[in-house]
Figure 1 (cartoon, rainbow, N blue to C red):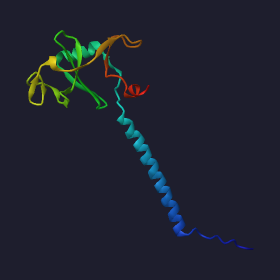
Figure 2: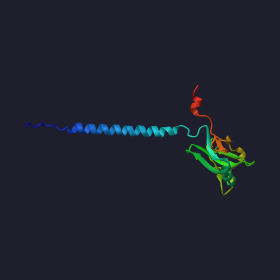
Figure 3: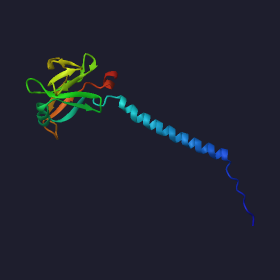
Figure 4: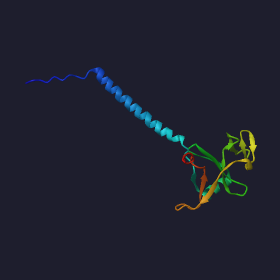
Length: 151
């Protein structure tokens, strides 16, 4: 009987292969994370966004304005105007992210100063009858940046 002699893999070669595998896996994870986080650079609420039942939202807004944010990007205050219609006020005033409703002072504020509701910018809103949800509040956050870039 002859015995076959196996030569073990040298440690340096084994270490090199394991190191290359770890680097490849790390690069794959980094690429995946970059792809996932890079998706957040695009506006998440561009165009028209269906918010919910207009009647339910009106009931809430009549009690008091309340703040909403879609994916922390498109911020608005849902409220009622002087006519009792639903409005979506922008949180930006004079280029500053400062508009807020002060529950204690019962007024719109930008930092410490009071703001007249007529001076607040609004997102366009509409109430639409969708096939599966009648009387749905829709806010138009504007056109897609991609659509504006395309010829």
